[in-house]
Amino acid sequence: METDELTADLLRDLRTVRPYPVVSLTMPTHRREPDNAQDPVRLRNLLAEAERRIDEDPAVARQARIDLRQQLERALADADLRHAQDGLVLYATTDSHQIWHLPREVPERVVLSDTFLTRNLVAAKAQALPYWVLVAAADRATLWSGAGDSLHQHERDGFPAVLEEGEWDVQHKERVGDQPSTFRDEDTRRFLRTVDAALAAVLADDPRPLLLVGLAQAVALLQEVGQAARTPAATVLKGNLTEGPESVLLDELAPARAGLVQQAASRIDAALDDARSRRTFAAGLDEVWDAVTTGRAHLVAVEEHFRRTVRLTDGHLTPLNGEPAGGWEDGVREDIVDELVEAALDNGAEVVFLPDDHLTDHNRIAAVLRY
Image (cartoon, rainbow, N blue to C red; front, side, top):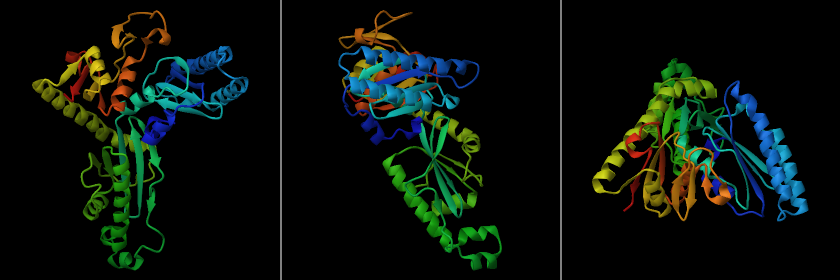
């Protein structure tokens, strides 16, 4: 699974309290050779560590121990590291397992608890700037779910939409005898109204920037007959892309996706400038952590690759350099930024990741406060 598949309902399910223990395993992975050769070995070692901790935990019943080991073995067999990105998250219970590939580096950890460790998924989802891509033609429309460099066709909620056999006014098309007549056909207009209605429902359920792709005639008619596609974040006027494939579609969308990143950065810069003038501004890890944990953060902006290992004691952060002494149980947090991101989203704040060095003057992280 990939980050664009993380819905609000799925996240709520992952956070559900379950019978102890459930296993959360995270590890960095590599996209290319030769670095990716180490990934299978690292995964096997982490799974062995998980099994060792399960076996040594007196709170784990014998049957649960057996079932968990079986799920971890199945997860190892199912893990396809040929398509690895920058991080892997594995969840296991006594009767199921999930494997997530993330476009964001994660620490190497094994956690036994009664809930899954979700902060890495949440941070990766926020970082990836999710977006929708609608590819429209006169007789077919496909919707694609994107997050960063990941793109998958959305095959539900009325998509893909196809003009049914028999609806097409063949006689009218033959009589006019040219391609533009297709876009004057009433069946085409009705079809694109249906597409627009389906798109509106998806955007209402999961609001994201919309990238619109298609020939100029198709785009113009879709915007004429409906509402949902009238103000896309970007438009790519090119046909024959309703079937993708993903790699070709991503290439065509590259300038539009870069524009989304720039739009986000410009919007956040303006919001931070305004917050400074109103004195509703926080900068640096300590100040932003305090604002997030007290529910005062309205918006959090953080550089894409900002990481900090700290010791968390009575709500205060102490930066750690080099090899940290102690572990999770002693308050050491290798991924405090991801933990901050999840807490911010839980408290209703918006989180935006910006390019590295964009927030140099603010110690790489800043927030707009509610008060």
